[in-house]
Picture 1 (tube, rainbow, N blue to C red):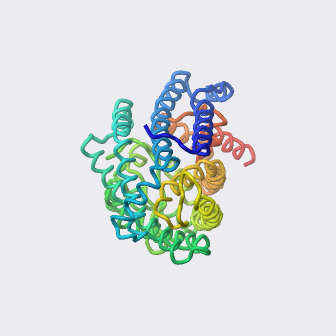
Picture 2 (cartoon, one colour):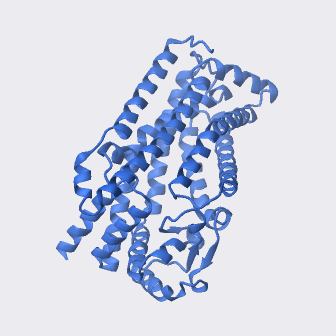
Picture 3 (tube, helix red, strand yellow):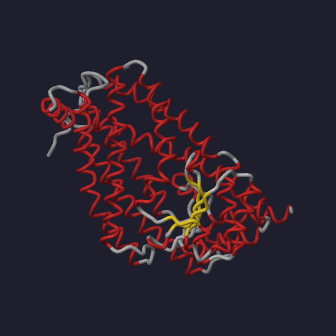
Length: 418
């Protein structure tokens, strides 16, 4: 067993475990009766209980993977292991810091995925038992393999860029790195619809499907919203699950509207327009552009904080970094990113919920059918076995969308005003 020789390490590990334990209790074990009472207006007691049970079980899987992540980060970032492996990778690469950092990152990534795999497979079979996935294990493994490959390439690009900037521009890297990250974000948004998404699903023009009769109404709604999009595509989402939705994708010339085939199969024309109106609302309010700008601002703050923390680790145990660009600091960078993502999650999700509310309002204004909006919300909650009685802690920490009951209340208020 690795001996934690540094008191700071013990303090950091104890603090991290304590905070995560409190969050686990608050978001997983505490009931919330008021939401259950309101939910009974739209859902049966059995539906509410079933969704709560499903959410509880899925949350256990989530916290299981989180525990694995914390354990791995603590071993690599808060013990002498990071320093020892950093020296070894530097020796293997002839003291070249960027290749050494990439090698360290690759080893951590592989260990991470191997430890996740049993939990991920169990989670797949759990979803299968609940009827929440239509994939067989072979197809799921294929999709997961592709996702891991994309993730690995993305991390390699980011890691190489980060450590190159740390070496070349040690004083100003934190200001330039977010600009590079923003450029990568725009590139990804542009290329994902034409290079990445087709790896998982087929996309067919709406006019060439059995639902082509929806084309005039969909086009009319797009024209009314004044959103410059030419392609309206249908995705074979039923390959993965019965989840119903629609979304906008792309940037510039790759912008397109994507309708799930499950939405077209299970919804009335008015319900389809309500869902589509919500997605149009995101474009009407420029949420993609605003999100990128807010992300750039957040990245500058995050990189500045990372720079200061890496500097504090130089020459101090258990890291004993020789410089901020020392490959031995890779696990520390990952730990800081992990903690930072958790700390910023409430703010990020709060902004996301605000955007979603604006899109909901746009849908109600465009389509003008609040009861249809309510009906499709109830229908999607049932199909997705959504938790319609979440605790405030869950909403605050995890919810990127307003809870179902909040969206129903908003639609009822809109109906009363109009």
